[in-house]
Length: 388
Image 1 (cartoon, rainbow, N blue to C red):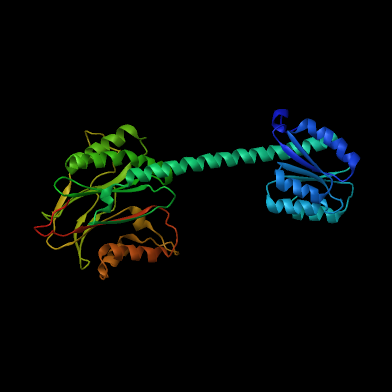
Image 2 (cartoon, helix red, strand yellow):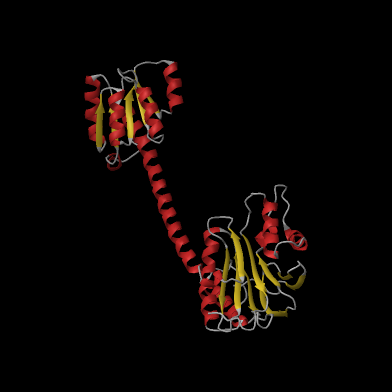
């Protein structure tokens, strides 16, 4: 019994190669009734020419033929397209043929005289595998196209001009194609720089999609001049209302007011933010005092922030937990200790020291989680400095 219904067999094209004219004529009459397109060749050389010209879905061929035998032709076909099914027919029962057929990658071996049922079953079986493979390939192609479009849209949404601010430096190293970490930055009307580091639950596309609601809220509310606690509370409400309960987001928001030399931070579930002076001294710490966004309802959510004033210039450092959890070849995490050691070493600015240290720690090993690092330069601008 055929593995494929007749309507699916009719979608297939078959190349049949046989040097015996009577056999070729009889088998061709049968094949023409089953398949959609049939190509006939009387030797391997002609068969290879027809294959390269028409690229049929599968090949049925004799082995012993003049000019070019079936196995040599099959080898050339498999080199062109290893997924093309090749069914060989032969009147010889020689072990050498079997071994060569296996080495070439022949999909089915039929002994002559060929039975109608066995030939139909072989073609149907090969056709079923071929069509399933095609369907899977088409699914992957559609999924790949969807991913490309989604990635493009996400990049467009997140490429705000605030990320090009001269006071800001950042690096995001995704563990997968889509990062579950999000960096956003924008200037308010009073010239304060607002920065957000959001780390969504999980990895890849699902994590990245759960960050999208935060992007619009962040940029719109900074543009309209809202205070940091109000922005945080609105973000929490949006996530609580529109994302699944298990999809929360560890978020750290900061407002750097350089003219007044102040830093304001709300940290919900991220590693502590550090104010690091230019010599590597950690002058201020902003630990996580709140749960991630999207967990608490409006009545229990606490939007209060922590504020500090700097006396000497430095950098505000923010990182995701993926940076601290980055493992070296021995399975050792970079950790808070590694971060502090990189800062204590001095030398380059804090951002460069930490980034170089974690990259050495990974030693080109891929991280298990998204790794993000942000630095905001904190220094009082000259009195006559203005921004366009």
